[in-house]
Image 1 (tube, rainbow, N blue to C red):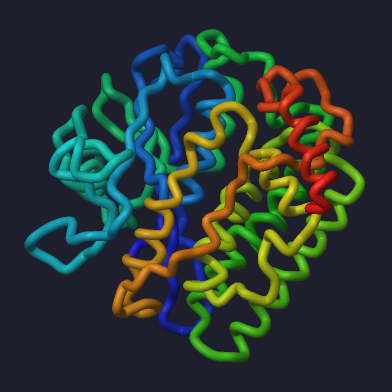
Image 2: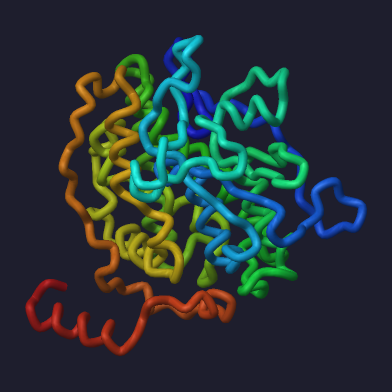
Length: 352
């Protein structure tokens, strides 16, 4: 069973399957995949954190007019009548699942069909995100970290927010280092907990996860974001896990030692990023919960969906106490005089 870009192996540990399509869109004149407006389409699932982070940077850079996107439906279903493979499928109509669309480009019924169109000999996993070339009718890239980089730099000539750089040269060393441990210990860490095959493996995984979350909490005690006071790649990578944590991972993956909303800095940080213009539209909690509670029969055979805390991430936060650099300010944070009023009201009520 696929999980965005991953599999739980039969031994005990969680392993993530390597992606296969690794071409690059480039502004270079001789590129096989030139950075042309209107040429590419991003296939995502709102349930998948790796796909959602690609959609987030597309929104932040202001690329909606240059790169189209659409989402599959949240539940894994059979992708072909001839076998039992379960994976990402498109709805039968644009009204069947709110937020999901039929594949208007290729008429595919599943993401698997997209891979078959791109390569008749493909034998790997059928994952999202998928960056699709409409002209050549093929997959350019299905590795989210590389799609992030392409969206960050290669489409600046058609981006509405070209000055935003989530991988600035002066921070690349710390970004690379932070990406590595966030990916291994948190992004993958929740899955290591959820798919552990025995208590010993789970105990190791859950300790690693919470050590990393505690590390984030300490970093965010003294600065607004993971790599300083400007938004960078690791913040997007961390956010997609944090936003799913209390509603899904805490229950279905047994990550309940401490909830995100019980961390003072992490919780305020999550609200801060959620309130960046464009980010909230990448979060569809109904898709997230349907997928995690309904697509893993080994973890939840009855597919019962827990009600969850239904956290309102649009509530005030305190991250404004740190200075912001200019690129981040251009993202038009949802802060105004009303924020001051709301905070004052909470202080008067004794809620803070």
